[in-house]
Image (cartoon, rainbow, N blue to C red; front, side, top):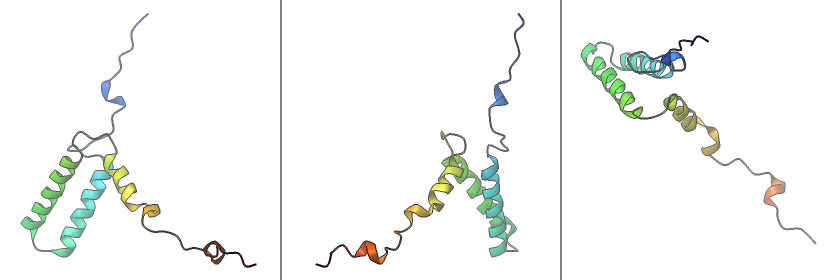
Length: 97
């Protein structure tokens, strides 16, 4: 029986400069925001992008794949933001006799 050659990187996610696709989208948003705020500051915007890149790399250090995407889902989840409104029937606990 012949052995089948299996590559180790089959199950890994695609990465570009150590960032996943969701991280690349976040970097793209930082890029557009930086150039909307300061259109002519090429070097300062490059510094902001570099800080965002190294900040993401530091945040993702020793974390599982998809960590930033899960963190964004957790932050944007509405269930922790507030309590829903009560109905009148729920607020009236005292029965009239």
